[in-house]
Amino acid sequence: MSYVQPQDFTRAMIDAGAKKIRMSTRDTLIRAFMAGAILALAAAFAVTVTVQTGSALLGAVLFPVGFILLYLLGFDLLTGVFTLVPLALLDKREGATVRGMLRNWGLVFLGNFGGALTVAFLMAFIATYGFSVTPDAVGQRLGEIGEARTLGYAEHGAAGMVTLFFRGVLCNWMVSTGVVAAMMSTSVTGKALTMWMPVMLFFYMGFEHSVVNMFLFPTGLMLGGDFSLGDYLVWNEIPTVIGNLVGGLCFVGLTLYVTHARTKAQRPLPEGAGVTAEREPAAV
Image (cartoon, rainbow, N blue to C red; front, top):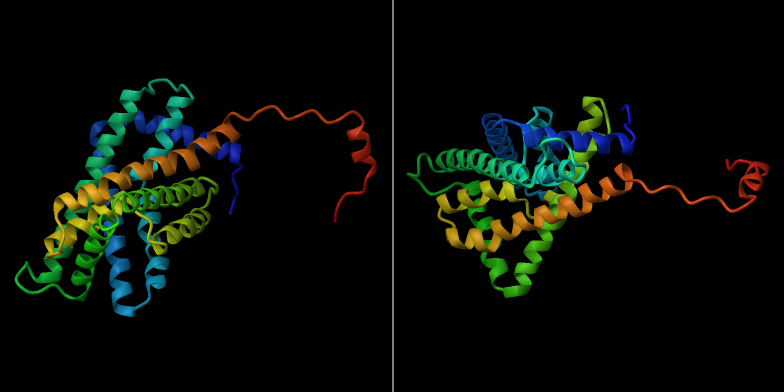
């Protein structure tokens, strides 16, 4: 698997963040568009599998295929740049500024949304033969997901909003762990296996991913879901984006940066401890 040490893959995280800040507008948009489209196709695949087999677990097991592909192709998700780009700023890399970070986030958001919306239209068209017939079972399920994960939160008021936010936090804690996990190995097999586990976890647990939702909810609206665009934005997308930012940056990016890139000096051993340790037999 060719394991990479934490201090080394943390440096790779900072390098990646710095490169994304300096990337051209064209390349940033293209890579973000393709990432949103591939992840949307993976979500459509997982929902299809779940509906046709009745097994949500099987859908979750297969969903990471899209995440792995987009990562290996070098495309960018909003959830990933939330975690990586601020590290370049903290590390004071050349050209890394707050403006550059916000520019990157904005472009990736637009690209992801464009890619996800394109696939949403294509899937809605397919499910209804050009909006001429009632949606099939998969299309009906997509509409139900949108309603349950907007109006379902709204029914609980402030508690629902906080629940939505926390699900966004937990989602990108796992997804960004997947992004970082890919840097723990130099082999394709190792990268795929380490990404698979946390991404499968987030999807099966029903956590909220801003880019996946850019596909699910517009698709639901196109297929007649009983919720509005305002419901989607207020009771899902906006709080999810904020939760994803907090989860990825606080629980993955900053924790790894602080302890592996800015490691504190080790505490000195008590006097004589080294001699004692040398006399003790090694544990077996």
